[in-house]
Length: 335
Image (cartoon, rainbow, N blue to C red; front, side, top):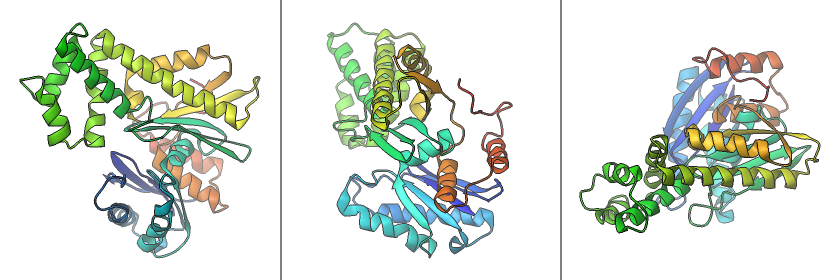
């Protein structure tokens, strides 16, 4: 049983995968993003205890029955003083030391590309890009919502709220985004937006980022300002990929495998502009749909780190279970 954990700013997903590619258990629980939480790293322990307990219950094993595990944790490596605590928590939950920890970007990469060389860009609540090539690793972006996370849900939401304020003032022509934000915030007076975001929400990273869906909806309805915000987000995500490709040393003539994950890519404008810009780049990119979910990718990575990678038959079986409602699941072919 290989345990994969994909922590995030919105939720934490876990799964158990067998050596022959059976999905033995899968569950989701609350966010394990601990930075800024009054609980600190204790939040991570509580979330992992909940999630590991449930996924092991589904598989009919105790936590110490997990063969190996990989824990992709949000903000891992971004506060060095917290690493000893974060590294020890999974051992306390599992009851053994057969696991590894890393940033959740690794789970996204391993899921999207099947833990093979290439680059994955994540855009959900935050954004980050990670790639591997011939044993080399590169991380680009993911500098937090305060001075980074370009192209993320939070980044989109802040620019959407900024556009809302400009439309309300008259600095921008009013568009569909204006009423969409009013409805989302449930306000009658526009200045009440300040009270909702700063007082009621307390500036919550997750709740602010959720406003990106309002921007995406306005863009789908044709609001030009919302569409431009999403197009800019796509450009920022492409810049992350281009930078990672250069740092990993991909040659100009190589086709660089690229995939993506995260809820922002569900926005049509972002996804289509991302594809267009990659296609127009000087470097050649082999854009692929994500093969597996990040939690499954974490399980595959656990198996690889343990020296017991799944055979192709097991990976194919897992692919069919990961996308049970898709008649033609993702393949290795570029999209």
